[in-house]
Image 1 (cartoon, rainbow, N blue to C red):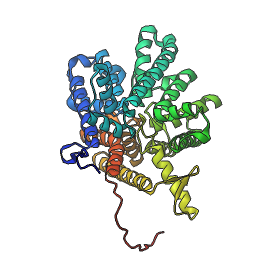
Image 2: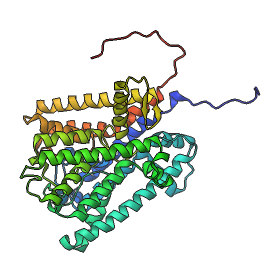
Image 3: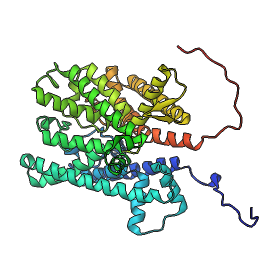
Image 4: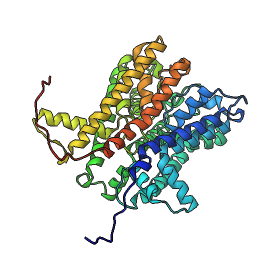
Length: 453
């Protein structure tokens, strides 16, 4: 080896971990949004908004959640709604991708550290690919939101007039694709007034699903021309698990709510199936509702809690533990039942570190949900299932509510703010932290069994 050539070293002690940068970025967006929303110009009544209410709204918007303490369509002015939709877009694209967009617009030369941070945030390791991927994500996002805007504007226009329909089209296209769940319908009704409108509900569902499966999955399907056998394992897991959850969710909601006159019981067969399908799609990604969630049975709420907790795909705008995590755990269970010592899915072996990472993310997420729901029972005297529903909705950045959030105490609101922030960034930062700490041991310790079951 040439002694005159030295390798550059990364000064780990002086660099901030990407996960920490990610957290700081989201926190900064939230604080700026909260301060803006406090201004009188942002409220319809022209008065100052309390910091707790503005902080809750900004956190929900940046974390693309959708839980609200004041009605978005009536409380906020046009300026306030613009601030909210801007926060949603920034949160949906993610802090790293948004930073990349600014660099591209300013035509600045990105540093090596910028590229490393973006590579880790987007899950890519090929040199230079992260910025190209960021461009594609931005173009894809704009294209989908424009199509959604056109369809929704056309659908809303006969009902609310063209001027309002144009703004509703923009706001709801951004909110739906980014799986935010914010709406301008008013009176906390979400999409309930349009429960008989297939064009509106199916457009929202399409935007939610595209936002919830991630761009990389869409790109893989296009490049492989839809040939399932040629897709990557990640894409296969996302598509199969997503389809399975939608089918099972639709059947579960149909079964639990079919006789409930407050939800699906008053609909005919086709409308009942449409709304059950929509409510199977929405809990996994965003908090839009075509039925009154507060009137659902406890069985129906439990079905939706399960869908919310799993969430959408990694790298998408959705929350939850992610469908890949759930799929890995599912295949690990199947492999264990079959007596296999390796986790295999679609003819591919899943590395053990990934399985352990999925277990860690799931267990810590369950622990957080348990602790938060328990804390809410101490501050609020309400049925536990409903409090658990609000907790999982906050953690999974879904935003569906059983009608409780606007009426909870300040302490409960602060708990939910923390839960939304932790739910949005926790699984990702935890996965990044675990990945960065992985080390190959230089030796192996002796094995010893323990009792299981």
